[in-house]
Length: 288
Image (cartoon, rainbow, N blue to C red):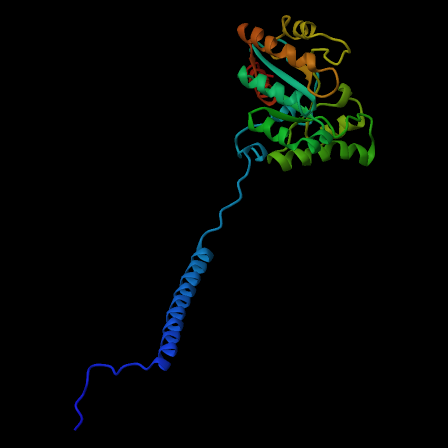
């Protein structure tokens, strides 16, 4: 019987190269196998990971639902408003700003209103809303009201053109803010034109103004605008200003002093829907 030996026999020189080649191939195979397993695990983890939603700039986001109230009392739906209720006692003012949004002027006025904790109503043109939707969203997001001022400022349009003047702007505002405007400012204050009549038929409160800044006058100065607005306004007045057009740099210059002077006098600047609700409450208390 041959005895068992636990010692390997010497490897011949010819076999050594094959031995080391096989050993290297084995090590490489193990390495590649492990790398493949690790990559597969990473791929599975990546596939299972939730996909992050794209970031949305706050300046482009719509106002949160319920952050504003543009509702108006029933008595003003489909009505024409051209004067304030006689004897209305509350020191509330509705500053209304027409023809925007405009890229520099609207933003500047919004900054001023925020600084003085004042609210306004912006009667916007649909053609401007299409150009500057982010400004419209900012108006609503900062607590101001938005009114319909037609699409392109044509008070005498008829037929389908009149329908478009009202409804195109309404749809734009609703798409961008989630809410329909309730007040309509007829272009040039023309209340007997087809566009104003159609807006009333759609349930809008068609409203002009009770006090004008006259800021569309060429060459008007900020001091004259300030006097036109701040000189003994009536409680419940609706004040006309503009942020669109070529002459309204002076309006922005006058606005801080107007807000300071009238606030110091005890007036509060509110949106037009808020003013209409205050009118309604007072008229109801008077039995009217």
